[in-house]
Image (cartoon, rainbow, N blue to C red):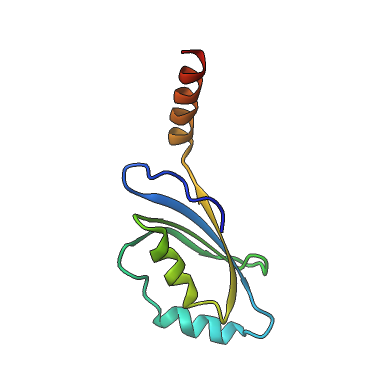
Length: 106
């Protein structure tokens, strides 16, 4: 997994791209999703099932603890390959950039 970003206001933002494994079926994936509930500690900002194969699912989540996100994804590893990408909002990124430039000229 990629570097985990610094916590901004206690939350870490993740984009997760899920591609179905060759041996999984649409029926299996749909049945699992109908029963599955996100674990406590994961705030879902968006979940999208695309008319696409790679990726088929895109999740946008926030959590206080990256381990919670990793544990949640292990419940899907028989049906999907998942790529988790830490992210930062443009506002937080620009603030970090200002801090870096200010430190560089100081």
